[in-house]
Structures are given as C-alpha cells and as structure tokens.
Length: 403
Image (cartoon, rainbow, N blue to C red; front, side, top):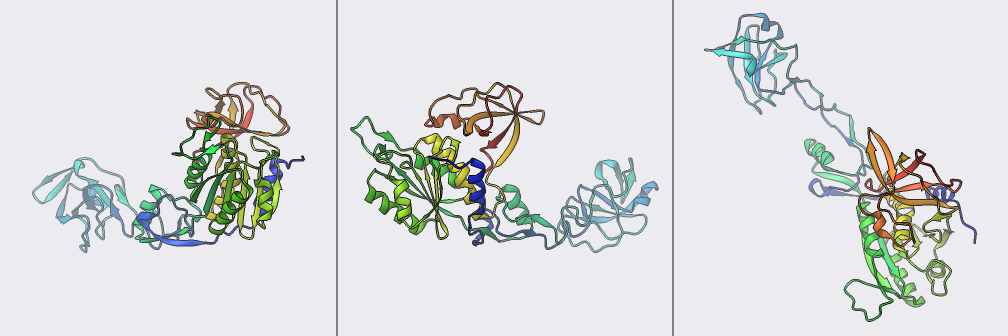
C-alpha cells in the first residue's frame, strides 16, 4: 500500500472547500471561548476626554512655579465638570474624573499641602502628569479584536467597555464521534468478557474537539457489524458537519469502516498517510460534510484528530491556525523509530525564552499509550528524511495548550 507524504496530505486538506461563513449572535456574557465572526472596531476614543489617573489637583502646569494655587472645589469621578480653570486656580480632581477645561496637569495629593482654600506645592510634577490623554487606550476606528480570535477574559472586558451587548461569533461546527469495534465497551456497561476494553477514544476526542470550539455529538460505540456501522454513519452525517470514527480502517477482516465510507456517497480524498502513528487514516467528503476515519489505538486517534480534524474545525470557525507550532532544541538524543513523519509525545521546557524538548516519563511502545499525553505534553515532529537526532538539534513542536 502506498502512502501520501504528510506534507501532501496537509496541502490537500487545505484545498478542501470548507464553509466558514456561518455565524450567530450571542450575549456577551455567553461568548467566553467562542470565536469572533467579525472584527471588533472601536466606535469612539478611549478615553473620550482627558482623564485623571490619580487623585490630586487639576492645574495649569505653569502655575506650579508659584507659591500657592486657589482651590475652586471638588470634581468627583462621574461628574460632568464644566468649570474652566484660569491661572492661579485648581480643582481637586479624583481618579477617573474628567480633567477641567484649562488644566493640563494633575499634581498628586501627596505632593501638596492644603492651607485654607489653597494648595502649597511641595514637589513639582512634569507637564501632563497623571493625565490620560484622549485616545490613550484606543482611537475611534481602531480594530481592537480581529475576526477569528478565541474570546477570553480580556476580549470580554474590552467589548464590555464598548457597550457591546451582543457578539457575532462563528457557528460551532458539529462533530459526531463514533468508536467502532466489538472489543470496545462503553462506560457503565457490565462485562463478563476480559477481552473487552473500556472505550476511551470517544471521550478523549469529544473533549479535544470541544476544547477547539466544536459542538460534539457523542454517538458512543458500535460493534464490528456492517449494517450497524452503516446506520450509525448515516445518522451521524445527517446531523453533523464532521464525522469522526475510530477503528475499522486498517486491513483486517473486521475493518469495515474503510469500505462503508464510500458506500455512504462520500468521496475519499485520501487513505493512507506516511505518518507514525496513524498511517491508515482516511479523509472523505460528502458535499459540505467530512468524514475522518481514524485508527483505533488511543494515542493514534488523538494525534490524527489533532493533525486532520482540528484544522477543519479551525477553518469552519474562521481561525487562522488550529494550533501553535514552535521551534525547540533537543535536551537529549532522540532515536527515530520509522521512515515516516513521526509525532512523538514530549515535554517542553522554556528557559530564557527558548524552548527545550525532553522525553522524561514518556514510554516507548505501541500507539495505545495515551498516558504519554498527560502533564502538559506536546508533539515533536520529525520528518521522513530525519534519522536519529543528537542532543542540541532544533526540531518542530506542536503545542497542545493552544487550541
């Protein structure tokens, strides 16, 4: 069986037509972790007027050379201050207050002594001290948050400051997840057969796709029966944008998925990619919907979901990238295990702003060892042309905390 190179498979994935224009409006308070469908543009300056950034006295800078300055009164935050300051006058002005017209500097309370209705200057301040100028934060027309941004606490705070009650966000793609195999037993189901194993793939991938911004439809497990698998896939395609299955794509007698997908009317984009783990992956498309048929081993299905599933989700959400890739330096020798492009679980440490990779606690074995992805792990990428790599070699690493 011939395999596509990893690079070719990714280029072909990028060329698939994906609907990335669907959006909906949600309340700002419900927008956390959603993806913006439109740029957020400032409609006004922030601040809209010169504002005091500390408690003190609004003055004309030139008056700080005088012996004293007459206090006209107070200017609390939120007041629409209309008085105009002339030479020799000041107004006590509080943090967040509009600076009175005629003033250009705020001298802090601790820099003066108050005697009757005057302030005595104990220590001068620079021109414009403690004054936020108009547009210091942003100016009208500035693009503050770009389309495709995943909304976090800072984005919510900025939009609240803009009085944005509703937010236009990308419609979450629906991902249906199916675990196939007669040896797979769903959680909570009793078993009298020690050869059966608990299903973890559908729960792992559900969490993975949800963390990437998708809405997950959990379809559980289905045994190695053609008709049952066919019916489950048909149901999945009727309600999801992406159908993700695990198991049944290799060359065994009971690997039915690889034969069923074409019978669903889906066009196979490719089957078989020169990667480790997961080389028997199948990618197919039916109209605007996609099928990802992945291997059954836990580590394999997780890695291939990251490599082939998350990019589709990201494009449907309007995001530029599915995950972040960085350059890092090997802290120890690395022994490559295949002639394929490999994705190896690793630890990433940042020292003096530089990424370093080690494999402490990572087990070498089959593609079933999902525990290798615990403890904030990453995926180190080594190409088809790479062999064993000595300590100090620069490698590419996919960070798994950036979905």
